Length: 214
Image (tube, rainbow, N blue to C red; front, side, top):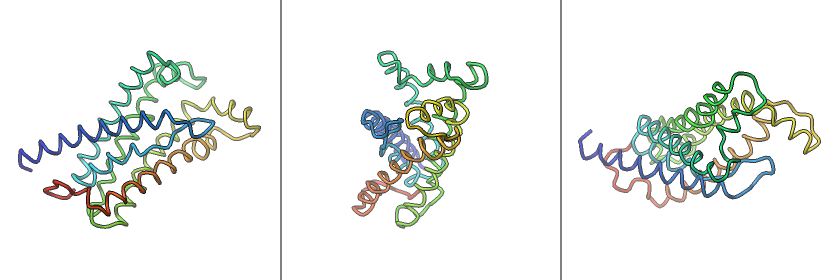
């Protein structure tokens, strides 16, 4: 890869990762489900990087997205403590010492799941094939979903008691995390990304200034 192309990739990663954070923040302000979770197209910029420049660029973009999310979460948490997941995890009624719960949130809620979005780039012909374009999003989103689901069981499992009392149910932490909390907003966000992505795809906007397809 030529120096000019490397600069282009780095610039795109920076710009689209920032756009992803902005989308995540803005759509996060819109309540959708009574138990939490928002539907957002924030994953789409990471998918675009992965499709345009391949898995490595996608993973780097997803990692940058995660780091920026943590920074924003901590900054906003100074004004609205309820959005500070690290502080909430520290006081969560789950197994393990405080430091372990905080580390698990950083890994399972941020670094690993959003980095894994870059694996959409495994589908190298996604910018010219609709099936590959959609399948890449589905597979990468599934990877993210699994990580969030594990976090919901291991770190946030105590919230199941609140859900059972509030909605008069008797579900397990596994069901609450994987089928109720995370599945609902993840499916909604995936559909949102596919819809917007296909609009851009059909208008050939995803290959603009692309010297080499990822």
